[in-house]
Image 1 (cartoon, helix red, strand yellow):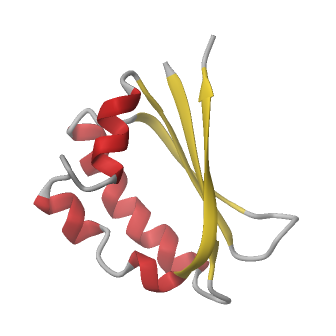
Image 2 (tube, rainbow, N blue to C red):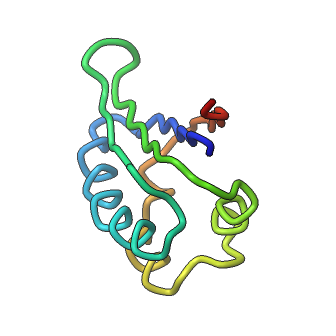
Length: 98
C-alpha cells in the first residue's frame, strides 16, 4: 500500500476553487478504485494557498497510469477541468505504508 501526497501551490486566492474541483474529483477516483481514504488539506500555517490531495493506493502503476491520463475516466477529466489554471506549481510525494 502506498500513500500518494500531491502538494499544489495554488495561484493567489485560488485555493478554494482548487478545493472545490478536488471535492468533485475525489468521489470519482474512489468509485473507480484508483485511490481510497482520500483527504483534501489546506494550509493553516506555512506557504499560502497550499492545497494537498492525498490518498492511499494498492497498485502504484494503476495510479501512475491514471495520473498520465491513460486510464482516467471521461467523468474524472470533466471534474478536473480547469484545475491547471489554478496552480502555479507543486510536487508529488509517494510513501510506502508499512
